[in-house]
Image 1 (cartoon, rainbow, N blue to C red):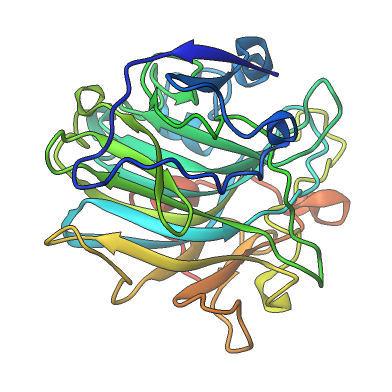
Image 2 (image 1 turned 30 degrees about the vertical axis):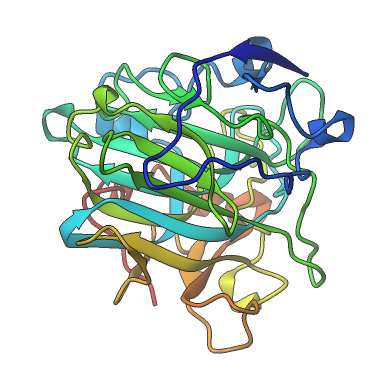
Amino acid sequence: MTIQMTIQEDYPSGMTKTEDGGFGWQVWHRNGTACPQGTVPVQRVEAEAELSQGKYGPLIPDAAERATKGHQYAVGFVEADLPIYGTKATLNVWNPVVESADDFSLAQIWVTSGNYKHNELNTLETGWQVYPNKYGDRQARLFTYWTIDAYISSGCYNHYCKGFVHVNRHVVLGGAITGTSTFGGDQFDITLQIWKDPLSGHWWLGMGLNVVPIGYWPVELFTTLSAHASKVQWGGEVLYINSTGLSNITQMGSGAFPRKGFRKAAYVCNMQIAEKNRSFLPPLDFQLGATQPDSYTAAKTHGRGPSGCGNHFYYGGPGPGPLRSSSFRSDPLAILFLFLGVYVVV
């Protein structure tokens, strides 16, 4: 269920303001695809309260430990010498199995700057996420997340706290996504873009091949991200705490390893970054990494890929699970991987 909130409208510089009627991919669109002019859809706070612990779980004093405890990653990334002003990618959507209420599985794009030294890591994150909720559904949901102090006291999903300014009346953050990829069959994907407006300095979120603006994070929120980013990442993340000790399953992507290829594995395609003149271009090169490659990994393949997908890679896996419970660990390599370094896979 959604409520409406009246806001002052804004729009990124250099873009003509238009109404895009192409949205119809969220569950709430069954009852209409847009709020009235001058309002935007906002998910009720009590629905988001299920995420009140935040993406990085209970507060742990050490930022690096909190950001890596139970978290595993399989991603592609670019850490550039030049300033980065945005990134864009297409992600296919799945409904991975997530059995424990403490866990989640997601696919996203990251824009980051800074690191854990002096707790100065800034991040912008957006994608789809699956987590068990009190209603028993396991649908992928569109989300955004940001932090400015390495997840110590900041860190906010969607509209759960002040920060993100929503301007699009067709899309609700936190809303369930109707389309899902089918294993061995049709694929459903979404295109996401984060970019820095050269005039206002705000970081904008857009969706779709034609990049329809959804809203923005005001530049005043940030410290190390106030001017530009230094690194981008694309791919999967899971939180697998195993708090019950029952070896609950937490899949990443489709639950299949990358070697399964198109129609069976999760993919990221058409990765682009904005440098120099802020034009979005495919990266000259990107690396792949994973923190627990026996459970989740990322890989390029030489087989047939999605049509028109450009630069792409596959990622995911079945997770530790009952047959892999002995392999699970809170991997100390994660801190080296996430924003500081990487366990590289090929």
